[in-house]
Image (cartoon, rainbow, N blue to C red):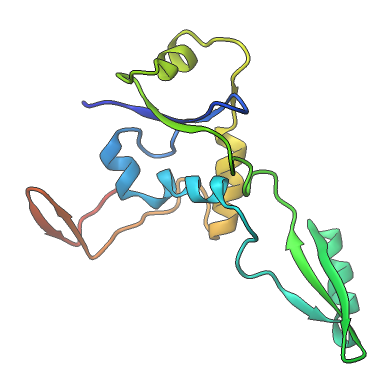
Length: 165
């Protein structure tokens, strides 16, 4: 059975129950599980921020502003306006700089027990909202995302075309 884990932000008193599996191997092998951590911990801008040239893109900018984007930077270069647009998010970089623990149910900190079993007041489960935003960023829907590598190598050997899910 093994030990089960949750992701805990001690400073914000938030936690995430990994999606798809909670033991260490599952967390390490499946990007849809632990992959959310770099998204939460990122210190910087998301990749792929569109740069719009103002001579052709005012209409596109206005459309983006109505659908969850914001102007990150507006400037002028060589007599032409441009905008750097950024998707408005709630969770990207939210945990950057905070104290984070991958807390196990046998862990020394007892965080797993305090949060999951005792359900101590003051802790917020952000699992659902955070994964929804993360999956949107990745471009796939929850529970519809089989990640099947060509090969998995473990201490016991190599497995070609394993079905992880």
